[in-house]
Image 1 (spheres, rainbow, N blue to C red):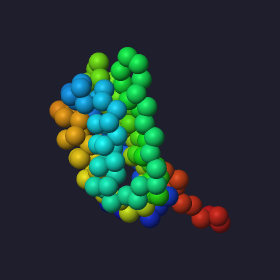
Image 2 (tube, rainbow, N blue to C red):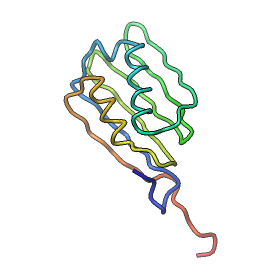
Image 3 (cartoon, rainbow, N blue to C red):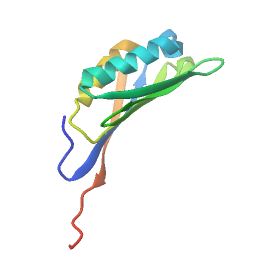
Length: 123
């Protein structure tokens, strides 16, 4: 979905609940799922970085030419917080659907924001 003409970017905050705990604790699996989500959205991947916390949990981000896709996981709560921001024409819905399936999430709640509203200099 494209960014509205009235904003510089679209920002989706997603909360995945009822996820597979093992998936959320697996650095390689979270990394692969995030890269697959970015690819499925049509975003241009620039780089990525992920970190496994002790005793569990993964945080990381995929930097895309259009902005970023980030995640923080809590395997002990079967919960993942996802942040997808884009100033380009990417299909965030498709990307998040791929990520939701990869993490085995039972439910998802989203908050959508328009970022950086465009304004005229002379009102």
